[in-house]
Length: 117
Image (tube, rainbow, N blue to C red; front, side):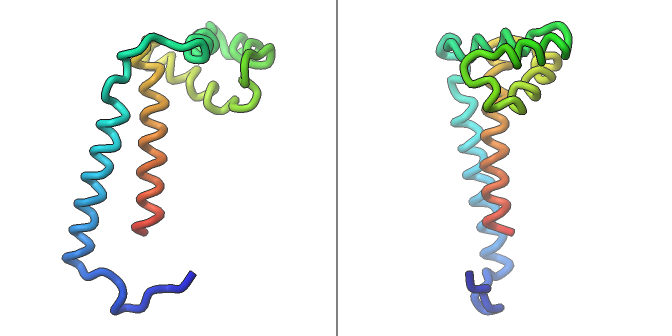
């Protein structure tokens, strides 16, 4: 990868325009992730995720995770975060899907930060 010379770098005015454009794109990305978040009923894997995250204790959570359902041992960090998210946000359809939507939006932000920075 070649580094850009000083004259190839964007000027201050075009950099601020780029930032405005990126913020608009991020706004659209967030709106698209949140639009219709609860239109459809829960699917099997989402219902299982709620059941797993609804364990009363952390020990019960890890026991249910190890006993496993479809793919639980392949992504334990997500279910661990979901366990605490469910305690804070509740166990509704919206709360369950909102975590994934926010994580996806966060990934979009990180992508733009790596490209801009």
